[in-house]
Length: 587
Image 1: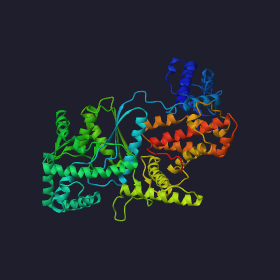
Image 2 (image 1 turned 90 degrees about the vertical axis):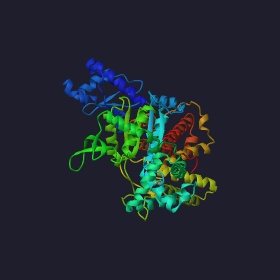
Image 3 (image 1 turned 30 degrees about the vertical axis):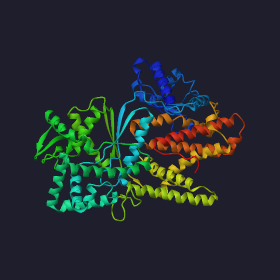
Image 4 (image 1 turned 60 degrees about the vertical axis):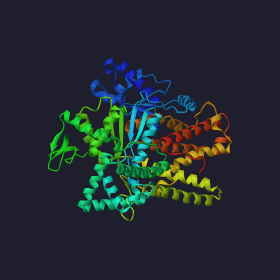
């Protein structure tokens, strides 16, 4: 809730108590943004909800509230509409004062968190010895944006990359490489990542078909777990090689992460099983140690167990996740832990969260959140695959976006008969291409699947990164044309005289509310929608006044309009930065 809405809510609550007595203290005035500008800016719908309790008509209740309501510093006189809606329209002088206030604030009126917390965002999480593919796109981008927003609000955020760097697959790969390419186990960079992935696939085929090789691979796992020097050295080389490849992607996307893989929690797994046993939750089932869950059943309708130790004594993902959860609470002292993974893992998180709660490992002041997301689909509505049926490499997908942005820019320069350096062209193409991919993902409701389309995401019209970047660059163009340094405008008075100015002003003042809502529900698409609407409102303002009319207007309108342009640009830049998107001064 933004500052204005909060003030109005308090005034309405006081008016309700004044009208109907102390028994009505704390009643929610149901204050929302008006759905139609002709009804004002806000609408309180509390009268309808009080009708039955008070035994009066809603319109009469609304009238009694308005009689006691003092919002004269903020709004025009309240109006009652329909069956009892209380409509509130902000005063122009109030809007001008608010804009003048945020003009000098680098945070643009967005307050920090009242009670900053230690928060963990667990995202990206690729597997060692495999390339990052399109399936890693959403976790990486959504997780980064969530972390950026929480950091901006002042929370102490730990960005964790829970990579798959342990388990049977390493025994399998090491055993296979010993036979076919032993240099890869002793020499750094003996293979490139593509070859390593190819060998992994061959090792998996061999593992599935050859019982003797399965046993050899298992023995390598035992050696790895026991810390055998040669096996451990080979494992470290494979991890480091993958890590370097991951970093190329993270650098392209401007992603910061701290790696803490599955191997980190290995020493803690036996303690998880011991403590579950002590708590009386463990049940042995067909040789495996399990915790039976409430609300989960198999196809036969029988209670479904979560296995924490396999019959052969080995551990699995659930054991590691339980160990990591305990570590994050006890050692990292996290108060909210956010897991950004695909929606297909929803049951897994619900299950191990339940086990941790049953074991009493989750304090009352700790919140666990699974942030699920849907699939990235091709334009045929199916999972994106290469023509060989493999998942598309994330590096290839990003390179293609940049390549298309490069071709599009070259074409536009030719049409406009503009000359630009190759350095300028490459930089603009990189920013536009990467931003287009990020924004196309983040602008979707994360719980839904979405269609990946280069043409749509690179379009300069509609809810796209290029549209947003162009709105920002357009404002910088006004600055260049008029030789204006926005930072030197000082704290000048904003005067709102035209309808497009008022619409833009009101929207600029909603940034804090939008960011607050994303902090709570972790839905970055709300911020995307806000930035898109802001860009549209700025373009309507720009089309009404044109850059030249802004610069040639008489004072004080000229400075006022320049301040509106500057506030819009700063809001776009801040909002896009929270999505992990870099702006461009020129396009």
